[in-house]
Image (cartoon, rainbow, N blue to C red; front, side, top):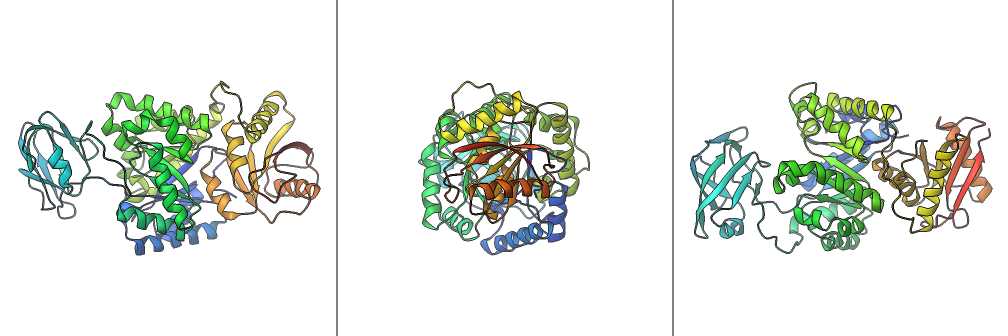
Amino acid sequence: MTGESSGRKTKIVATVGPASWDVTILKQLILSGVDVFRVNAAHNSIEARWRIVESIREAIAATGHHVGILQDLAGVKPRTGPLPDGDSIRLRRDASVTLIAGSDQLTPEVITIDEEEVVHRLRPGQRVLMADGLLELVVQEADGTSAKCHVVRGGYLRGRQGVTVPGAPVDQRVLSEDECRDIRFAAEADIEYLGMSFVTKAADVDMVRSELQRYGGRCKIIAKIERAEALESIDAVAQAADALMVARGDLGVQLPPEDVPLAQKRIIQVGHKFGRPVITATQMLESMIYQPVPTRAETSDVANAVLDGTDAVMLSAETATGDYPLEAVAMMDRIVSAIERSLPPHREPDTEEPTTIASTIARAAFDITQRSSLVNVIGVLTRSGFSAREVARERPEVPIIAMTNDAFIANQLALVWGVKSIVVDYASGTEELMAQMSSELIKAGEARPGDHALIVGSLVYHNEPGHTDALHLRRISD
């Protein structure tokens, strides 16, 4: 089974936090439609994270669904100094404020930044954005140790808020000690996905993959597209990564707001081009942090992400710290399901020829479903999940059912558009596999005797992953 609801094909990612990490709530979230749980390493210790992951897996086992876990690496992000929990300072428009390096408590006159190099590099005329770009300062004077700034866009600033200097040079990306520790945790906890923040180029992803391999991790790596540099090299980043995230919070700080919608569409298109699942994230149902229904604009935002062809939509504070986590997931499910029922799946025109046997077979399966009403379902035999991802990339209108012998792969496929998974011990022979697929499709309620299934997978080398070599049309029998 899967966390999908009512045949929904676009998946739902929900961030876990104080509002949702109780096992009872986690179970309800799965039953409401969550396909992947996100755990943000920036907000918990390793010890706390073990408990969170154990609670998630307990909830998954209780529901019998296949649900993935995504751990976000914290990344290197400059932050302001602290304030007591719940406190904030007000930065008034046109006021003057001084930025200095350090971690002293904030005041309306002096704001500390925890990375000395950020303050050292500030120059007159540069913009300094805080709190996801809600507050904007412009540097007037800078001497390398402090910077006097003019408040262009004021508001309330809480402690430990992110700081961004758009257009500032980017240092060579290196993994911090905390990131290496978190990568090791992901490997040891057998997490399905690892999200990398502040990617600038393909080599950044390769660096994380190398570190992950040191510990034998099986995670798929999600490149979070948050910087203009990553957008400029998006094809290479997509090829290096296993999935992409349209991280609109930081991306919206780096780019002018009017450029973000087109960036979202471009990232999704590139994901389709290279067969990489794409998550659209940040502020999708933001108002549901505090109220039980979204705004009409947020509803349209979720709908447009589905129309763009995203594989998944993500909830952040809505489910991590919000007052209505269950309602937010249920609403996301309602919006996505309504759009999918009303419109056919989004599919880019075929502008490129398939380049592998697996992609050729997946394209052929799609073409058959388009040309014949005979086919009711596509069954995919997969040990690694690759064949299922290739079929999903084509966006067929019939259900995609992956039959795998590895529950970890089934949980990874929970992120992939349209894929439901069945976990079994594979039969030993080709005909036995075909009969097993027929039986499992009926058992799962995905087919009835007399239906026709297209079966994709490896029949000659079915004991080895990565050998997609067959497309078989079969009449389902009892």
